[in-house]
Amino acid sequence: MFKLNHNEFFDNNKVINVLPRLPQEPFPEHCHDFHELVLVKSGCGIHFCDGRAIHVSRGSILYLKDEDVHFFDQLDNLCLTNVLFMPDEFHSSPDLISLLTESCRSDSGQIMVGQNIQQQAELLLIQIREENERQDTYSSLMVETLFSQLAVLLWPCIVTGK
Ligand code: RM4
Ligand code: NI
Image (cartoon, rainbow, N blue to C red; front, side, top):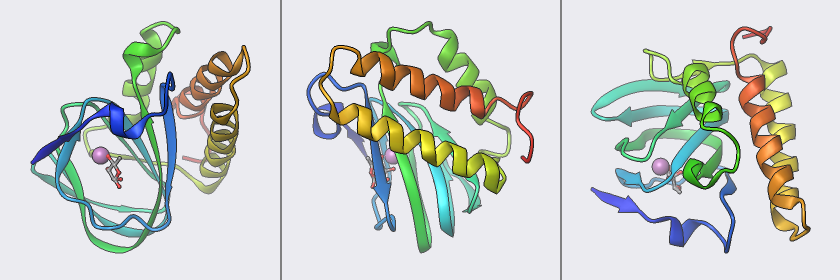
């Protein structure tokens, strides 16, 4: 088992990296020194996290924290959007991570969202990717704000269609 280091996965001064996995290729068991939000677009597979296996498919969302040890198995054209991020580098309040944790870390190891939420989330992720590539004065503020919007979108109390 190995630990992925942020130096290999984040460009200079970036705190978020949105990585499409179309599809996710087999990747060995690992943990990270960053966090990872995984949105399943299509296909299916088995996600192992800390020794526990769950079936994932379209609409599954998983939130992995740095020390979580995980990998995907039995990949069946599993297409994902991976959002890698370093919460300690965010300027926003630590409440954002509490919000995301309460929204996305359920006892079952995942949350399932409907198509409507999935589409809205993917739109936000496209915006985050675009903004992340810019080097404007306000780019990092925009990226963090868009990421906060994603966390708000996934908050169960306001979500319909889950
Ligand atoms: C891999 C896989 C892992 C992720 C790394 C960055 O393809 O999706 O879960 O941590 O990328
Ligand atoms: Ni990972």
